[in-house]
Amino acid sequence: MQSEKKLAVLIDADNASVKNLKPIMGEVAKYGMPTIKHAYGDWARLANWKDALLDVGAVPVQQYAYTTGKNSTDVALIIEAMDILHNDVVDGFVIVSSDSDFTPLALRLRESGKMVLGIGESKTPKPFIKACDKFIYVDVLVPPVPPVQEQTNTAGKIAVPSAQPQTKPIPTKTVNFIAQCIQESANESGQALLSHLGTLIIKKKPDFDSRNYGYSQLSKLLRVIERFEVGGAGTHVWVKDKKVEQ
Image (cartoon, rainbow, N blue to C red; front, side, top):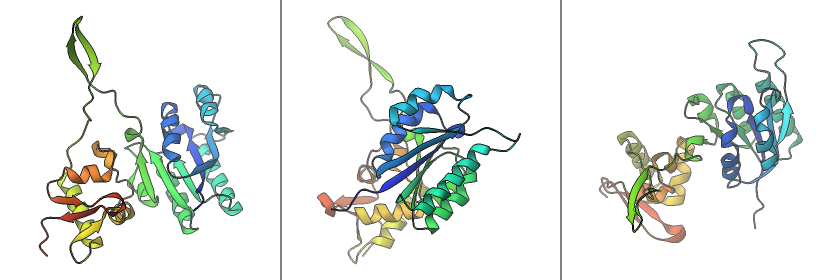
């Protein structure tokens, strides 16, 4: 059995929200074991992080702003990331930030054969996103409060959260992108294994995530797009572009 990947989780607390910390760590657990969990910032100014850091077992790393206009937190995070890299004690890094200043760091870590997972807000610049193996938007980890709908019982009307998933329209450019990936990974019958397709999609577009459109899995997203045919079962689920004639 293959051992679980060891991960270093490095959090830019100056550029992240404390309310997202627990969902972020829950997501990280899907990719491996976070053996290093460090958050960087000026904790005199970020006192509200204390309980959240203790709750997830993360270590706060104090960093003062020595010079006005310079982000000392970024520098501290980068220096420690390189120390961890050279000590070779982890298989991958998780950088929690929406700051493009970490683009060179992500590229350097990947050049050294380390997996890089980025987690940040939708405002994150594309260069940083592209520098990661996979980038996840915090929006999909902290879903909005579901709309309230009224139901009637014997006591009258009561308000309950709607159980309906909040899906979003799938842009034509996204459908065309998926179709291109299907074509590139398909066999002679035009069928692409879902596992291979998912890997290719992430390689080409690190921030692609079916949850961005309200679907928990790629297969569920593909099934609602009329252009695609999904078949098979288990580990042999396949996808086919019905527009492509064989």
